[in-house]
Length: 445
Ligand SMILES: [Zn+2]
View 1 (spheres, rainbow, N blue to C red):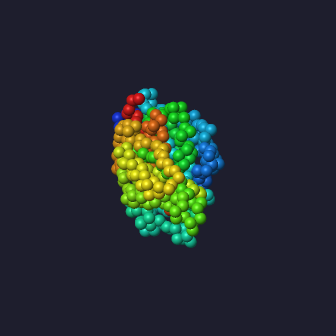
View 2: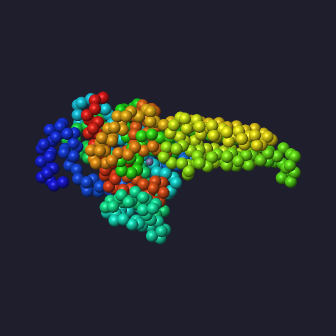
View 3: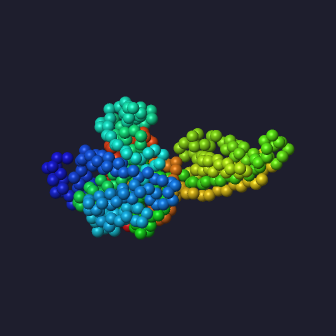
C-alpha cells in the first residue's frame, strides 16, 4: 500500500470503522510485509528444539519448550502485550487490551509450542522456496527428499506461493510454530494499530499438545476467555468443527505356555500368544484405520505384549457418533468372546474399556463457527468444515467451559521430514484473525 493512500484511509478512520468493521481500512497492512514477518518469525521459531517426550512424566515434557516459552514471552512483552505470564507448566499467556468500551466477548487464540517426536526436531534448518512454479521442491538432494504433487497434492493450488521446508533429517516444526508465528504477527499488528476496534483478546502458547498433556494443566477459568480458536489447522479455509470420540480397550489372555512343546498335546497347554493374535485377526479389516476415512470410525490394535503365560492386547476405538462407538465396542467384545470360546483351556481372560475423550461438536456453539466463516468469506477464503480424525486441545477447552474451534495455519505433511508451511496460506490465516476479531466486535457479551 502506498503511503499517501494509507494516510488518507487513516484520516477517514472513525467512520469507516463503525460503518463497515473493515479492519483493512484502519490498519497499515500490506500482504508482502505480512508474509515477510511470518517468514522471519517461523524461520526463527523452528530452530528451537521443542520435541515432546511422552516418557518424561513432566509438563512441559522437554527443556526446549521452557527455553522457547521464555523467548515467546519476551517477544510478547517487546511488542507491547499486557499481563505476559508463564505458568508452572510452561503455558505462556498474554493479553491485548480492548480498544472499545462496548461489552464484547473476550476472544482467545492458542497455538502449541511442542513438536511431534515422530521425526527429529533437532538442528532444523529452514529454507524458503519462493514463488513456487510447479514441479518438485527439493528438500535435500543427497537424501532424495522432495515434495512432489503426488506426496503433497495441495501444491497443485500453491503456484506462486512461498513454501518453507526443513533441509533433511528433521521435521520443519510448522505444526504448530506456524500457528505461533500467525498469532504473534497478529498481536504485533494489533498492538501497533490501535485504530482497529476490538474487544479484549487473550493469547496462549501451550506445551505438549502432541502428547495431550499440556492443555490439561491450564486453568481455563483463570484464563478468562469467552470463546477461543486454536490456530493449528492445515489447508486454506479449513476449520475443525468436530473430533472423534475416543475409547481404549485392553484384552488380557492368560494361558499356560510353560509345558514342554513336545508334550503339549493332552496337557494344560493353552497358547496365550495365539489367543492375542487370533483376537487381532478377528477384528474386521474393513474397520481399520487404513481402510476407513471421512466420518467412518475404526478399531486399531496398538500393541500386543507377551510375557510368560500372559498376553495383553491394547487398542483404540474411534468414532464421531455414539451409535457407531457402541457398534465398534460390540465388535471388539464379540471377537474377544469368540477367542475365549476357541481356547477352553485358558486360565483367565479379561476385557476392559476406558473412555478417553468425546466429540466436542455438541458443546461448540454455532456462533463460534459462524463468526469464523463470515470472517473467512470477507477475506475471500472459502470455508471448509473438517471432522478431525483424532482429538484436539480444543476438546479439553470446550468441555471445560471455553468453546474452541480450530483455524487453518497452512501446514502440511505434519510430523515428517516432508513437512512444509505455505506462507501465503499463513498470510490468509492472519487476515482471517483480524477479520474474526472485527466480526466479534459486533457481538455483545
Ligand atoms: Zn498441531
